[in-house]
Length: 358
Length: 110
Image (tube, rainbow over the protein chains, first blue to last red):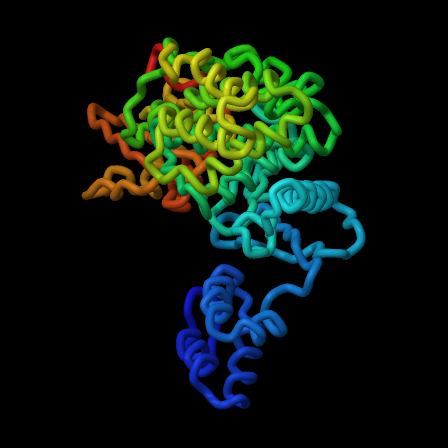
């Protein structure tokens, strides 16, 4: 029988039952059948269930071998239904001829390595999820996104965004992958304040991945997002600035303080950006910049740890700016001592942006 | 006939408005516009698409068609955008004589 373009001789759910309850022979046969499923997303969901019941079988036969972390595909200007596309480069394979492929590969690796080394996090889901990336999505597509299970990159249109820019820019890649981290942890809803926080965590970790890659301290970092991807229609060096919201490029209107919070309805009207998620993210972005620079040193070490712990253990899908402020203040006390310099810096940062009243 | 496409969201979070007005198009393009609008079936839509949970950095679209006194305005998420509507949007964004503007959310002139 067929479903969604994949043909199973036996329905997947029955295969899982065979694995859970069948004889050793039935089990091995079922696991092998599942392994050849081409629909990655389905396989992943089934693998997770398998891991609960037959972890050794899953590890041996279905999960990518150690080091098998990244795969890059070329969707060849195809659309959503064509994802992921044609496999071009698997983990450990040599560089491809296509620079977009290699950049997506390297960027995913650098981001994976960041979360692994700094926070002991195993991929975006914390359980070794294979990082799938597809390049050349649609034609002149001026965007990149995490679609819930993989990275997707357009080529840019050379008007708003430079051709090839999205895969070139490490903070763009890390921003999008961090949406994946948020999806598997706090699950911040992409609307109004929880949405602005969702955007902010992606900018914060996007910047931190870049800073660590370049070996920059908080003082040395430029705190810009999307530097180098701006096309001629968007005059200016970058898309957003955590250091100085509202100054990154000609149409940057991000506020850096609650006094300038932009009230927009969450009504699906594209003018309203789901309640201003890309606009009001400037406020928590700036709070992170203030905290990180007040604390000093490498921003990912203390400020980053506070923000990471908050995102992954304290916030929920409806958390607002107040909740983020309260949680980061509490977490900074827990991690580095109540009343310590770190906690004071975090509290002062949120006061400075007007979220915590002074 | 006048077709206006507002696109919001994406990584940049900017609002891009593109408009194709028959009066500014060549006779051939005027015909193409009419065909694409018909194929998009925007005047046929009986019910509004159901609201969906917004996804990070995906686009949201609003397409407005005005023709001989009738006006139809329909919203789409990027994920639910039908191929015929995508073709219309793509064509409107590139045809000779189209108008375009970009601005951030929350600025005047929505």
